Length: 578
Image (cartoon, rainbow, N blue to C red):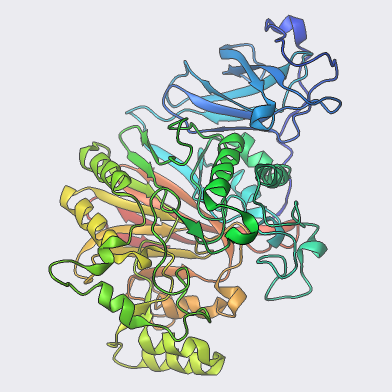
């Protein structure tokens, strides 16, 4: 079915309120009587069983300054039954954003909410819900990643509006830092050079790579003017985590590939303002107001599952040591140096040299593994930025990458038609593949707890369902669902859109998934062509992931469809496909 991009569910026509609303007209907003504008809508996030974060942005068009607001949470659309209410200020110090932790709510309940200025002007109405109680039997949520404004329309967000999802999880790259130069990533479609940010009307502002607090605020504001994004925020509560592009490409704790100290100043300063803008614009409950760089946190969905949201990017990641910021094919490190990687995995004087490389700090590692060990929920779901499974290709195929399409095709065909026994090596060392010893330690630690592990991942711009196995491949420890991107280009932008069936083996097995017969034995399903999201349904009996795709991001008219459904049984992690 073809859908128009914009859903008209955001209601801005409200009953006249003001004095009759029973809410005080708060002071501190200056002398203007002009109603405040709520240009960026409303949002909610970080739900708990009894509370939730509410967000908006409010500013008077004729005056700079703070804007005093009242807020209401109700159980009915007419706001006749107010459950929770209070006041908050959209302050200039926070870029005129406002957040409040609305308390006194009941578990597993749906609510509506709104903000009201001193003149009685109301924001759009948002819908939200709390986390379930222990008796919940099923939870459905949508998973997103990698939203590049310049690359196309946010049809994926629109597709999720009527999906039945109760919650949204965003795994990072909510914004991208690049400027509007046509040479910058995402401003020109690599598969069709006539399609550009200019032709789509999606040119980013400011024109430069964002560096200052004002820059980051401006970029968030541009994203939040998008009708589809604004609509989905108002539809359901979000749980978010950042990745690198909320800061700069291939970021790590002490720097980033796309950060130049000579022209962009100190990394610590840029990192600080990027984090500040994130906390201002996202409906996130800040875990530690004194340390905005700490955002890993946990949510318990009744007895069904615990969701552990990791920060594998900023909090503790050491610099990518294999290749150029994790890219072994960059011209700066040609040819591919497998020997360095292999040396890191060779026990030397009782120590693996790679053990010094960390995706997360020891503190976050202990937090995660401790939470999993003590959890009493059925499933342990980890929300994580980067692919965790081993995406290792045959060495001959990797060598052919740089030799052109013909050589590459020959290498793939030769491998698949042969014994398939040659050495396999990783190609993306900016993912967990670049930190193999910490990954192995994590997986073995979780294995020892006996808990059922499901990892959710983003960042790759393509869709994957993978086995999480030990480094030697002998132990199945969990499974991984990795979502495609909302708009950012994937394998298809490099001419590899048709590679999926050779990766997951369905080319050889007539469409049968999960055989391990493809180029990457731990990949059971992949799509290297389409943009989309994951629709996850969790029950005590199983976890079901539906890979939903849209057929266009370059037109506001599109069709959405489920490309593959993967179900994992709680009893033995047995997998079925449809």
